[in-house]
Every structure is written in C-alpha cells, then in structure tokens.
Length: 165
Image 1 (cartoon, rainbow, N blue to C red):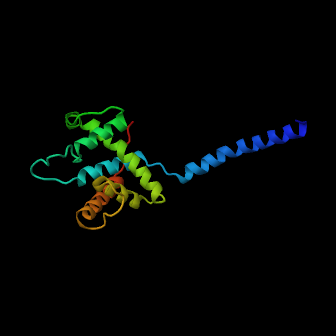
Image 2 (image 1 turned 90 degrees about the vertical axis):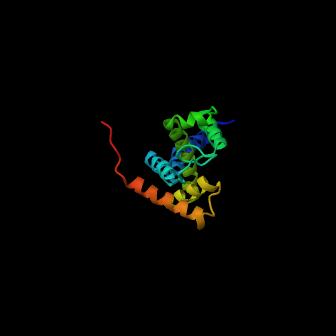
C-alpha cells in the first residue's frame, strides 16, 4: 500500500471517529430517559389507583394488587432472584424497589413509543399495568382506572421535590 492510500484510510478513520460523539449525543437527545421523579410519581399513582375492597382480594398482593406469579417474575428480572409473596408482603421497601424497576422499564418504553409525550406514556404504562396491553383502555373499568392513574400521577409529579442536605 502506498503512502497516499494509507493517509486516505487514516483520514477517513479520523473523520469517522470525530463524528461518533456527535452521533451518540444526537441519539441520546432523541431518546428520553425517565427521571426518578417520574418513576416515583408513577409508582405512587399505581398504588393509589389499585382497586380497594373491604376484604382482601384473593390472589392479589401488596398495596399494588399484584398476582404472585407476576411478583416472582419481576423479582427475578429486577433483583436477579425470585422472591416469595410473603417476602414482598413483609417488606414494603423491597416491593417498591421491584415495582419501581418495572415502572422504569415500562415508562421508558412508552416514552419512546409515544414520541416523549408524557401523558400518552403514563396512559400506556397504566393500561399495560392493568391489562398487559398498551392500548384498549379507553372505556369501562380499565378506562376509569387509567384516568385515575393519570390524575394521581399528575398530582404526584406536581408536588415539590424534597431536597436532602
């Protein structure tokens, strides 16, 4: 290979590596990452909107009314170990940690799917939470549930953040 060819290849490589940070920055700007405040607001909104009844709802656990098999799968996904229902029932911090992990995943997916539209992302994540589908929660019980989640989310996100000194 002659000197001109080597110089040309070196020049192309240098130019390409020069563009890499710019391309990566552009990709990061278009992909929104959900904030901790948004995750916390959604977790709390789901908890507040969970169906309440005077007697325990058999087959559903924690304040979020989650099925046991779902809890086990989520703990395996988020904690890399499967936990029992009683472990969740007896440790609200652990439950909130796992729920936050799943909410983070779903909110990020919904922000991406809805062009960073926060309201649409919350609606999609709430629908998924209740039904396993991102759409189809416009009326009836699931429609009312999603509206409740959105309302609670908006209330939570509007609260001032607490600063720790």
